[in-house]
Length: 99
Image 1 (cartoon, one colour):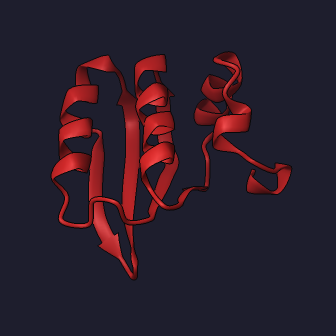
Image 2 (cartoon, one colour; image 1 turned 90 degrees about the vertical axis):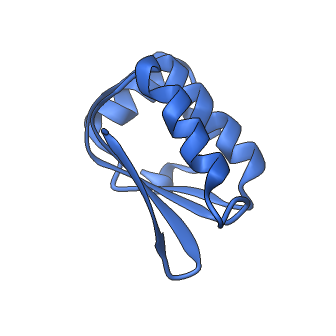
């Protein structure tokens, strides 16, 4: 799987690696929903992400609405390009300092 979910201090860490596409979206959504920390703050690490499609970006946007806090650690160039391509910068990066 190109994603993993673990606990780090008081939050969940979602690591996205390689290529994450629509074929992974259902498994990713299920994993996030079944987590014992459902509703906890989430930190997303995309430093090793090479490609992500719109479906997964929409899933992350939805997660922003359900998690008390969602942050992006070390966004890869591929992640930032995909966010920009979809016009979702405001949804993911509330301030320029987030990058």
